[in-house]
Image (cartoon, rainbow over all chains, first blue to last red; front, side, top):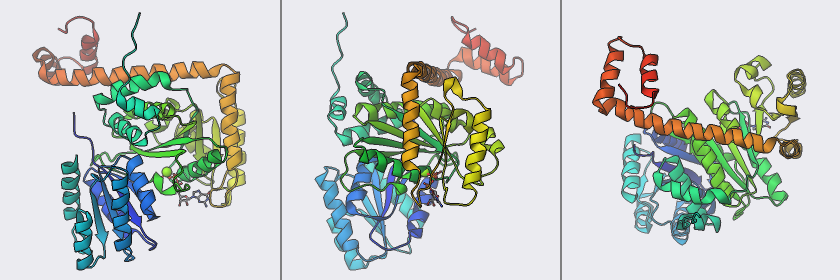
Length: 134
Length: 320
Ligand SMILES: Nc1nc2c(ncn2[C@@H]2O[C@H](COP(=O)(O)OP(=O)(O)OP(=O)(O)O)[C@@H](O)[C@H]2O)c(=O)[nH]1
Ligand SMILES: [Mg+2]
């Protein structure tokens, strides 16, 4: 049997208004053979976790610009754990200061991509994280 | 006497309302994973043949937005809803972007709604088979109504007739003339036409044109398709849309059509499943089995044509 596609949830928590970056990443993942469930803008951590569980995704990607990452990302991780889904890897992209990035990684975000990251790096990292979790 | 097979733990969990178990078996069905079979087999007798509403139509006409409002309507009526939204896979990468979920807007923590996005993953006929299986799992999981969204193009809308008990075809004003609707094969499958974006100019005309077209072309087996106008941005017509879907469901019961339609769908599902199995086995053998490889060589060398080769393969007994 051929290996089924990796299912990834791309969501954008927080209140900031546009999702161009998230859409570009979504398209790159699709072109690499991922099935991308695009949850869209202004998702609460509760909605994100619920979507991840209903869609039975292998991995979650969060994008943020508003600076609320220190509040929202750990909340997503905590809710996943509460639902016994702490094994789903979570990566993040956006404008995140180095110090915050270190703390988020410690909290369990598996990879963090700054604005300069190549799409290729995002894709290969997502592949590696999803396959190693499976 | 037959002894009932033990119910697998996953099936038990699904019947008990475990949404993780439900999500997982849907993935297995999508993956054509054989471990799903004992679970779906155990669930089948526990399905209730609930209404399955197919919502189809061209790209961007508002299918997901309508489904979102229908879900709101159904929740107000205290009915639970399971939704499957099918989007095409890219023929190049095999990947896809599944974006129908964006339109879903439900109260936090409402356990009466389950939404699942699904990629068509190539095989045209397979879409219907996997989707059917998923709708039945949702049925067994206890949802009162199942909604299936598909993009109406080519094979997909044909598939919807093999999945849904009521098919809603969504159109918008100025999408093009009715001939295009006819050409797309959308006309034959509609039990209810929904002219969405009725807030835009031209909606009245589109509705009248459609109604005229419906009047001229007699409906299938005693049912004349209904035409409803809706808007999701300035919400209107949603209650009427649901009433017409229900009217069709009631017609299926009153006219005795429901069991006939069910039989037709199941028959086509079985044929599709056999086709998938036989096809897979045969294409394996055509490559590996020396005697069959020889047959393929003959075709490649233009000594026999593909149809003759197929006739030989289809003959019972060992292939020559
Ligand atoms: N003016 C107007 N726009 C609408 C209406 N319903 C949906 N739209 C808009 O149409 C666009 C597509 O809506 P969707 O609900 O995603 O349509 P869809 O048919 O599910 O799209 P696909 O799944 O991509 O084929 C969005 O920008 C909606 O805001 C409506 O009643 N009136
Ligand atoms: Mg849609």
